[in-house]
Length: 225
Length: 148
Image 1 (tube, each protein chain N blue to C red):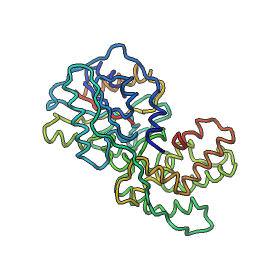
Image 2: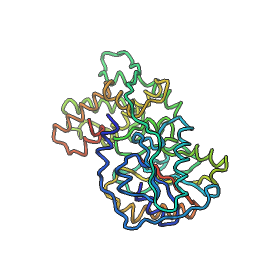
Image 3: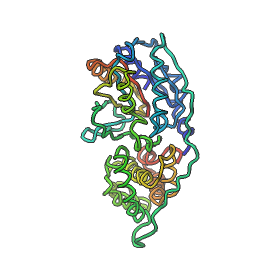
Image 4: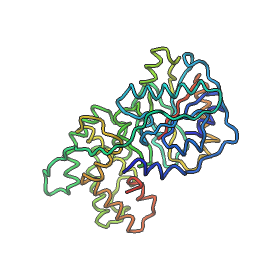
C-alpha cells in the first residue's frame, strides 16, 4: 500500500494509507499513514459498525491537513479476541457419505441464508461454486488417502479450491450466527470444529508428506497450521 | 489462528525505500473527489480473477457493489469483508460524508491491486503509475488506501 501511496502522490493525488502492521507502515513510510491496530482483513476495524468506521475515516481525513509526512496511530485497538463460535453443526444424516460431505450438505441451507443476507463477496466461486463443494471435498478425501493430488480430481489450484471450501463454511457460519463473528473466529471454527476443516488439513498434510512442492500445499491453510 | 502471529510473519517483509517522498497538498476536503484504492484483490464477477503475483489492477465501478475478493493469501480474516464490504472498501461511509458535505464527491471509479506481493517493481514502475493516471484523469484529488 505504501508503495502505491508514494506513486500516487508523485502523480498529484493526496493519499492517506491505513496500515494494519505497525512495523510495515513505519518502515515503508507513506506520506500520510494511519496505523490502525486492527485484525488483518479488517482495515476499517469493525464490520457492520458505521459509527466506528466513520471514526477511522475522520482520523484519516484529518491527516490531510498535515504540512508534511505524518504517521499517527488510531486511538482504539481491535483484537481478534478469543471468541469460540458456537455454530451448531448438522447431525449425521447419511451414514454412507464421508462425514465431511454429509456435513457440507447439511450446511447448505445456512450457506444459502448467509449469501442471501450478505451477498457472495468472499464465499465461493473462485474455482468452485457452492454446488461443487461436495466434489471438491471428495477430491480431498482421495488426497488424504494417498492419491497424488494431480490424480485426485481437484477442480483447480489446491489453494484456490481450499479458499472456496473455507469460504463456503465461513458463509454458513454467518448464516448460523446471530452476530458478525470476531476476526478469525470463523476460520478457527472451520479448522478446529468441522469435518471439512479437518479433512482439508489432512489432505494438506498428505501432500506435504508426499514431497509435493511447498507452495502447492502451504497456501491451502493459514501459515500457522 | 492468532492475528498477532500472522502479523509477525509479515512485518519484516522487505519493501521499496523511497529516497524522497512526494507530498501533494489536496484541495479542501469539502471540494475534493475521493477514491478508495485497496490491496484486497477485489474484482467484479465479470472481470478476470487475480492470478498469483498479479501486479495489475482492476477498476471498480462505485455503483456496482458486487465486489468479490480474489486474494490468494489465506492469512487474513475474510469474514469481515464477507459480511460488510465497508470493512475494506468504505463506499457507503464515503457516500454519507458526501451527502453531509464533508467531502466534495465520491469518485465513480476505485482501484484494487493484489496484496501479499514480494516483488513490487512492476507495481512501482508500471501498474501504480497507470492507476494513478487513470484516477487523476477522472478528477480524483484524494485516495484512501486500505490494506489486505
